[in-house]
Length: 94
Image 1: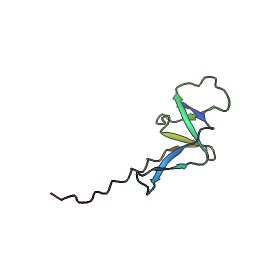
Image 2: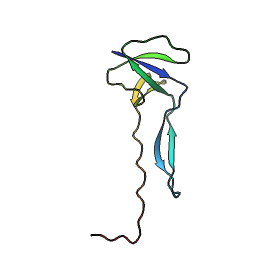
Image 3: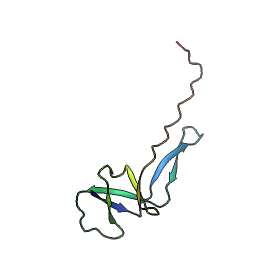
Image 4: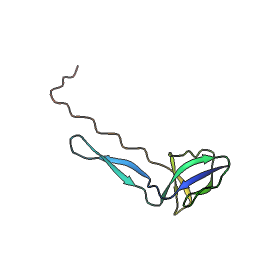
């Protein structure tokens, strides 16, 4: 079992969509109650508040998972929605 260093003051966001503007701009969604997994270590060490340590499984990685403070669970951060493909006019199909 490892230890995850949680930073509760950092917002967890992901790209949930894109605007219709030209060029498209990413739309960021904030995950409520999400705390950043700043580091995963075999052993904890003293940290300043508001950082804190939580036991975690060996498959948890920093900045890939986040800590849900409401449930006490680690959740995989959603994959970003890929940017839209540009519309090309006058292209020929070969």
